[in-house]
Image 1 (cartoon, rainbow, N blue to C red):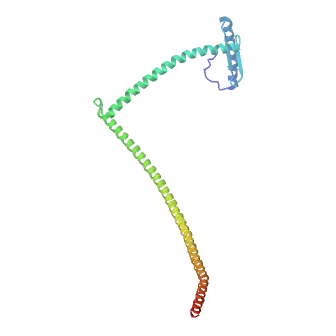
Image 2 (image 1 turned 30 degrees about the vertical axis):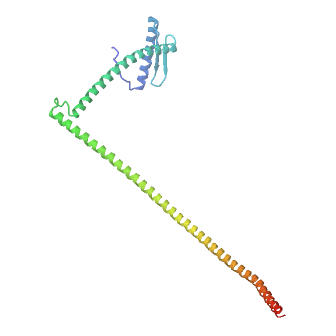
Length: 241
């Protein structure tokens, strides 16, 4: 009786899965060792179990095998990457060229050009598209106008507030000027009153001094009259004699 064929899928039973792993791991290790010996190949085998345990085999040194692998893989990847990059950019250029052609054709049709090859349905679609575009343009224009109106209103409020502040400052300055003018008028009134008082006192002093001088001058006048009378009397007596 032959051995039954095992389906290539995950073994659900953990015990059977572990047994199968051990058998096949040992067989794989054996095949790798035989390949290295029979064919003079440099072989490196790394296995991690489902539990995370490491199993490895190397015909020489695992480090040298990995370094050699990285060198070869890097060169291969570089060549592959260069060819892949060239092909990628060629594809991108072709796609962009096709998109540019389609955009130019759509633009001409929207401008009313090259409409001869369009059917009635295509023309209706173009008309609907233009109407939608026009509606979007109008909505955007209205939005911008509303934003400008709000901005102008905001600036108007700010200007009005600045005008109110300036008006308050002007009124305050006028009030200060009036108070200053009032103080100047009061000072001038006091000066005028002092000046009038000085003039009045001066006149009084001058009148008093004039009267004093008149009294002093009246005495010599009386003396002269007495002398004159005595002289007349002497003359009279001399004439009689």
